[in-house]
Image 1 (cartoon, one colour):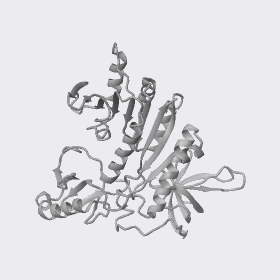
Image 2 (cartoon, helix red, strand yellow; image 1 turned 180 degrees about the vertical axis):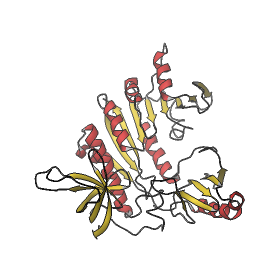
Image 3 (cartoon, helix red, strand yellow; image 1 turned 90 degrees about the horizontal axis):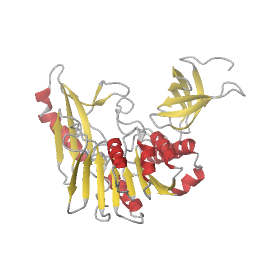
Image 4 (cartoon, one colour; image 1 turned 45 degrees about the vertical axis):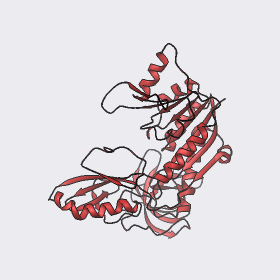
Length: 389
């Protein structure tokens, strides 16, 4: 390269696409024939023409900030929340909702194609995108931090509190509870350094539960988007019901069995496996009426014990909903179980794509769904239905 890039240098660039995160992607072509420099720009929108300033250097890319938007993209819109850009809760309020969905589709397809080498043309024919009926007021669970009389969320890239009085992504009933708490209870907790945490969850009954200074999900875990969760469950149900024989279904990383409760009547036996927080290595409890067994164990432990059993019962269908890090070492073990169908749920396109590479020798992708559970953020939920070759 003719001249090294340096911090604080400014360039005019075209913003190409969003990345999986708060930043968009641009490339700097320094001289003709040079390999372009990949730059991740926070606050940019696809289609922008912008002047940027380099801020941080990494091995294969740089980070940059916007100095000026020279020509605004049609994907841009005015953020609804006045705290956007400071609060770390949302990252994409500057994009229209149509642009958000298009960006999430591009991220998912790009990551799977790049990692698995499955042609994009094949993926596009089976991809279904499920947007939200409303990109605002959808969040039915919230963790709010307090300090003195201030309440809000953490500032982006820091643990500093951003004091907030109104959050447009929260469900109105959560926001009502927030205002009531701030008026009636926060003063009792106020003090120079008095810090607290509040978690609110809107239940199906319409009641809002409240936990103050308790561990996350102390009153039980629920999805933050009830509409998105209903869509997710229906997609899983539809895929699982295509299984030819319905003797046994495994629900790995299953929590309370949220994803398979609709399937319990259709399979002779359903088995939900999830880690036991109290340190129990393995315990099992069966509901004789429904045929649903709950195993409290890590998935890795369960798979080891299953493979060592004298007469292991093979599942016909496996539903897996791993954490953000993906299946990791368990991917190959699950593929080797040999179920007719594996339904892989993921909240991270990169770990999803890595996991898929462990299945594609034995399985083919039957369907691919993207559910926008988290409008105004870069997060997305996806479901891949794998069928044994």
